[in-house]
Length: 90
Image (cartoon, rainbow, N blue to C red; front, side, top):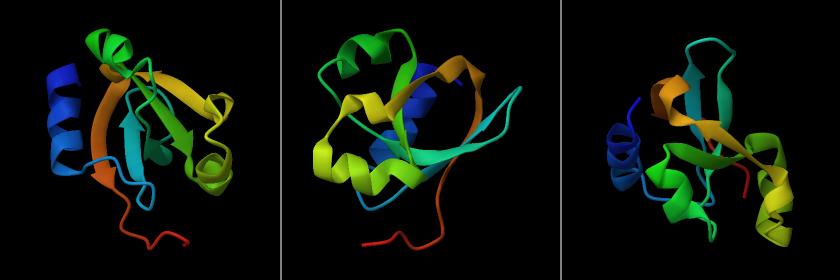
């Protein structure tokens, strides 16, 4: 996907610490987590890279804001983005 397509998705589904997204890839299993906006967001976005925290680590990230819990993905390898329809834990 292009950076513009991903930005459009994020505009329609703003960064929300209580909701996760499901990212499908061309050559690997889907990833479920939340997009995060860190200080490097503008630079990563220009290069079509996106920082995400896995659903299994979201609570830990909410408490610590530790960027080491996140992973960076190349948007060119995305095939589909969807909001997780399952209710998140509060």
